[in-house]
Length: 439
Ligand code: NI
Image (cartoon, rainbow, N blue to C red; front, side, top):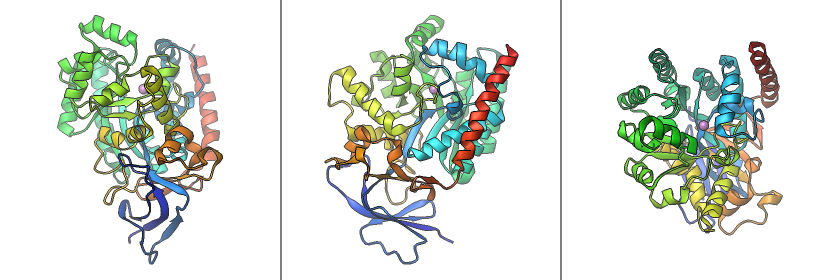
């Protein structure tokens, strides 16, 4: 039996259209797909009608780089450089993670994603089958990669590859096709050349993607230069890793040559401005990359270096950071920034035929933003202006993924947020106790 939802008379905001002309229409969802867009769709035989009047209907947002379970480490180690934060704080506590902690962290992250309008996220972390379980229960869409780290040790490398293969076998295309599995070599500085080459082989063989951190800090560039004689993107190109199926998170420190490599190899970028600013990593040359027609999408990174997963806030930060660093107020207009968080995200994950815009035949991943709020009044001339510069995640009223309502009038339908908050608070206390016991 077909399940149908009709969203009536909302203002439609699509990426890459002239959004200064108000376009009001209704959208009919049949099962997981957008079936019809128009102004005269009959309500007859429709299972559920949502009144979209006065609301903005837009594609669900796409967060192309995060570590969902790290929501447990929100506020855990602030105000350090990446190197100190990672080596002195994050790695020591991560050593005590298990299936349960990652599951609870992922559920907490899922609550935050749904409540702030993100329907698809790309994740790299550990115990990913438990993250997949959380994705399945939450009803969101996830591209999951197990973070592979071998420090050049062969035995560790083989273990990491086995873990990836298990995750791929058990979870790729799971949860009604909402889960995809990518390779996740952590970065060129803690994944060896052998591991990176193997990841490339497996990605080609399985026709899947590669999710990796590249060019995040000056220290990384110096370290990779010292180890290989090349800058990070030059090195990855040299060993044959780069291609259109690679999503490189950060890409902060780039030479002109590296920008050309990224363009030539059609590598997709995930820009994480809050994390880059908080860890004082630097400013990614996003406006320059967009001028080179490079596909730049947006990610929040983990909640320990952000410290939230609100992609609407992230859009504003991305735009303002480019304006102030280039001293050009036209850099990253609201329309351009909105495209980064929707259709560019879909392209980055190889899902542009399915998600990222409101089109008949695409998956029904949609959000409604309530404009009846002080920070959304009056209506902006161009609709994306209030979304990017004035809104935040709490203006999202309804979230739909794969044709299923996950939040309506800010009430979650798939997850019990109070019980998840309680378990998450307990989990971080237990995790810190485990760490202290081991010291
Ligand atoms: Ni990251």
